[in-house]
Length: 356
Image (cartoon, rainbow, N blue to C red; front, side):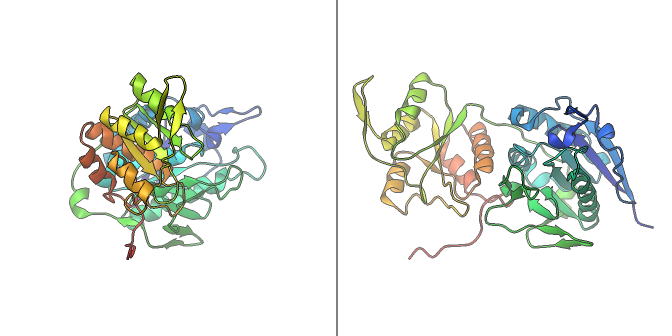
């Protein structure tokens, strides 16, 4: 007889969590699950996050509350499923990866849907059924970490990205293949993480520190640098992410600010931010992007001005990991860079480039 797999299901809202006509949030996870049976040998306990809402409204502080709710139930269950809206699921996956880091020695699965349970052709039934199957299989094979179930694929939560608004195949991981396939039998691919006996013997450790005063700006030669300089002067930021070109190039063209009768470039703005104690992270917009600030002259100028490379992080992970690093080491730029450049749970692209 197979051993029972105990699964904790946390309902946080989103399209998957809506029912009825007109649509409304389900009163509870139990109501949402009516008519959906988990596999045999899977025992499910449903719980509801107190703030069930459109995922667009979710704050990092509320993700920390979700993580603590999982932490409170960690010892009683073998696997965890979080029902979540798709629009900000990648942010939540990144946050869980940072909150729990390597101490999470059980599978944690995030799942959403593009349609509601009551709509004809809904993906809810398949999404939830497959999530239960993965929870059971991962537990039985000692697979651990944060993952997303999307129809027939399982994706690594550390590099998760939403690519489509309507397509059922809404998620992927830039630069990575699925870590598992949901076929008649679960098929494991490269990239799954397995339980570490030493870490598994210890308690779950959670660290939810994130810097709140951080923003992202997409930079081009036509983007005026006073977008950053004004924020520096008002003291509203502790960190900023600049989405750049290529491998980390930031435009050096000078702009004249006629309101203050001064002339400066984005490079000058980075230097001013660094001097003011504001950390500036440089992020590539490309799927295979790796920020190497020494490669081109403009990147080297940004680095000299104090910029920090966000390496090959996805935008969602860059936001969370940079916030986390700044919160942990608010005045230590070198320590922040070292943390960002360390591949903790698979969030960085692997491999070495020949730069000769």
